[in-house]
Image (cartoon, rainbow, N blue to C red; front, side):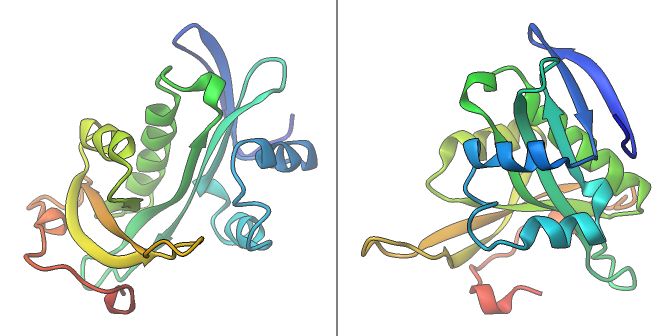
Length: 190
């Protein structure tokens, strides 16, 4: 398989292949894990074109898609805000609780370190306590609450998000994770 890089590792009792090469077969398989590739249409193409190293796919030895992480690099170096951002992390239900999500996060953090990032951030629904707790176990903390970040459907109210961050080695004083004392609105996010 041609790819920018790949690795083979055993996570739990599963052999895992991770790579940065999105094949049409893998792209089609994403519809079984998440609807992100069906809604919005061009998100994955934009990310692959601009930040291919931040797109990591995990496959079982038989080629079954286990999960993926998609991210990007953004922010200002001058203001010490250059960072890696986790846009999406998804693991197929049958491969959860094996440590795969933690491994994918670790890989994205390593890429962000190599790119000189000060921190890695992500947004997560306030109501998704399973994910919030997992991110906390991985060293992330709530930097701020973003009011009505997620649009609701079916007449439900919009939902708030936590902007969670983990400082990287370049942020020696851990300034990037000092929590904001008040919530912000989506339009206030830079």
